[in-house]
Amino acid sequence: MEQNESKWIAQLSEMALASSQVDSSLYAKYDVKRGLRDINGKGVLAGLTQIGEVQAHPEGDEAGPGHLIYRGMDVEDLVAGFLPEGRPGYEETCYLLLGGELPSREELAGFGGLLGSYRDLPHYFVRDSLLALSSRDMMNGMAQSILALYTLDDAADDVSLPNVMRQCLKLIATFPLLAVYSYQASSYRHAGKSLVIHTPRPDLSTAENFLHMLRSDSRYTPLEAQLLDLALVLHAEHGGGNNSTFTTHVVTSSLTDTYSAIAAAMGSLKGPRHGGANAKVVAMFEEMKQEVTDWSSDGQVGDYLLKLLRKEAFDRSGLIYGIGHAVYSTSDPRTEILRGQVEKLAAEKGLGEEMDLYKRVERLGPEVIGHERRMYKGVSANVDFYSGFLYRLLEIPRELFTPIFAMARIAGWSAHRLEELANGGKIIRPAYKSVAPRRAYVPLDRR
Image 1: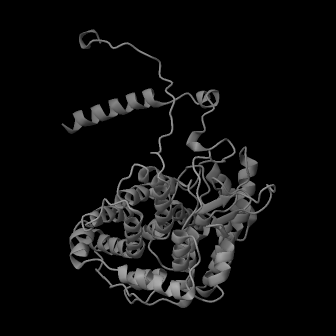
Image 2: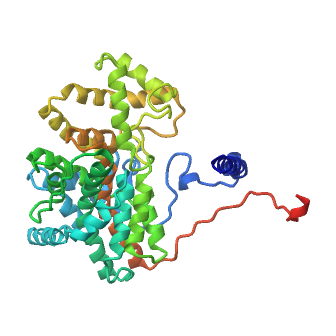
Image 3: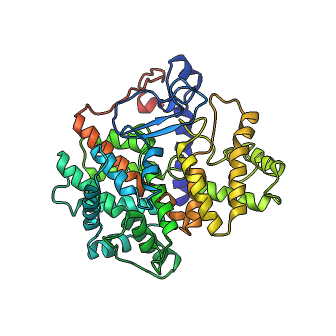
């Protein structure tokens, strides 16, 4: 039976490949924007939003730095507001993205208190869903739990804005629990590790709660919490066109429930072309540290990067993970913000030499790519380049890198879901042109 099954699968797979591949010249003939992007990487305009904006460079200055805008506000200005004060910024960012305005001190305290009151899961849910049905993949485990939460909501299918806002706030509050508990359950069931479940504390921020629940001793330094919080702020939103947020818009436009829409976004973010890149960066550097004997040598590091591009090193994909972005060309503003802060933690952990290696690759990567390949726009280090290193400095398991991304981006997904519903638009349905030749049906006995 297994041999017969394998035969059929192999045969149908070959047929599917032969009948599905489209002549690449036809995309130019019919002016099709593959991936809804033109040859320069610029996205096709598919919607309007007031939530987030990604700018490759200032208008009229193609050599200028990139910008990330939250509700009309440059994220650099947002970070400059909370970081020097030594307070967390993710909750303030959530309020801004959801409501469109910055909160007052009193509003921020009240909002934090509301999230704290929502930051809980029934004991039977933790036992029966997270622990009993643990997954080896944290993103799938979280998506499974999100769909399970549907069954606990008496108004799960109500798509009125107040109800969806309630659902989104609860998801924002509980995502750290879903991520950590999914990891703990998987480690216990599949890796034979001790099971440690910490109850969240309503007085802690999102970042603090994550570290408190993840670590068996619940201990963390102020700098560790501050940098994880910063990473959450920088990942919270990235315009309506990124793959998972666009997925949220598409699925929301069908008027399905919140849990289904967010689970669909999770499926998108799980992909290594989207949310899984920072783990790839860390793995790539682990091999690089073994292959390059002198980390301070531009020649040795450059040679290794060339091997990556020529599919002679790491996973043979031809990619330098963390270098390049679909939109940004000159610089990714999130990288510019994160680099200096990560450098502080690397120094605190005694890993300054490794930080220097990251900075060397950041400098050499675009040069090597430019010499080796024809480029239609510039390339630079993206946020994944340093976020994975940050999580490693925080001793966060690699399995949680993408769930942390989701833990941040749930704010942006929520804001875009609310925006899609508020505008009452049509169901999103782009067109695909068929290029298959017309054929007549052949009766079975004549095939």
